[in-house]
Image 1 (cartoon, rainbow, N blue to C red):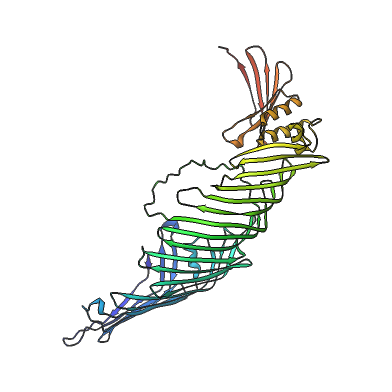
Image 2: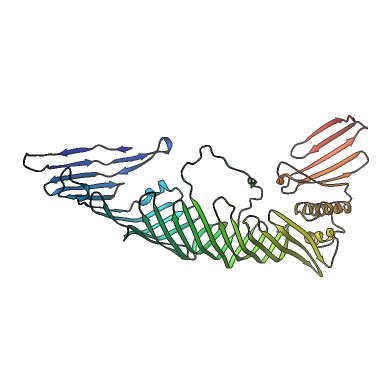
Length: 510
């Protein structure tokens, strides 16, 4: 919506022996430009504008000046030398141009909500020449002194510069750069246009220590060397990204439940436009100071990967990542990671092979756990030097001493660890721990999700009185149940926990 009033004045003149002549002007008062509807409508102030023209024996000359926002202006010129009505477009010369200096760049934030605090100078200088049937454009665009914030990444880009210039053969040369943190990136490329549907692009991006994330959970500078080729609808991204140093402290989302890998998302209105086909092949390498701390794991990460992503396929990876000088903390105990490898062999990036060993040393005893298999189905196995029963190995890992003499609370800790860690033969191990504690039942009860699983410990206090206690494997919720058999058919049950109640039950045998 364009909100303003216009004043128009023109004076056409034609005499029988003279060429058509005309002159006039249109003045556009200041107003507003609005788009959108309802609460989402946006409004911007617009400055004054004017258009004037003159047609005489020398041809057509037109000038336009437009006010943008409150201060910035655009100017345009158009000349058709020797113009007369009915002239063939192929023989009619054309000359013109568009110039402007724009400093109020914050308007970009209305179209790109992910950025804020945009500032800088945008200079436009576009020329047109040739014939009316085949005009030739010369583009010169400069962005300088620019800066902006990217709140979601926690970074501020400074010294942002970008230039777009015409080149022979109808091509456009692109150059730019920016600084973030202690590093910077540089962009060079070329665009070729035949029309809006037939165009190509070649871009190269190099940088060093360019900060891409600066959040409480991640500080991540990168050194990229990337090449991008675009020929719609195909995009090819190749190159390498080196991470010289980083601090990664991801938040714990262990309670979140993601969709199954076979879930297909169906939209209400399929996109009829051609889909971009993105082909990616990147080399990722880690430097000597990439530190990770999260999910109980702490240490330095090293290694390199090749990442391959093709349309319609799962992202694949080849290579290896290692945990160096690492430790793993579980149930309040820190275990030393003597070997930690994540191995990718060309399969899905979310299901690598695992080869890890964590140990705890107590005097002359080394107790440990080996992790193998794949990330989606890991296999855990207990071991020790010297060799001992698995219950004692687990006790050394958790308590720092053998199973004998463990208190009830310590026994419960061991039972939770045996069931939650998924150790090979974990149910049998939990049963042996339960027997050593004098329990009649040790089991795991399921729930709607894996996070609802609970460890159940039960014991007969007398032939008629049975007590069991369940505690969540992944939370602190607990429930105490009592069952007393009044007779062969009647029994009384009570429950104390998040909900409390009692029931009188009558048993009918068939």
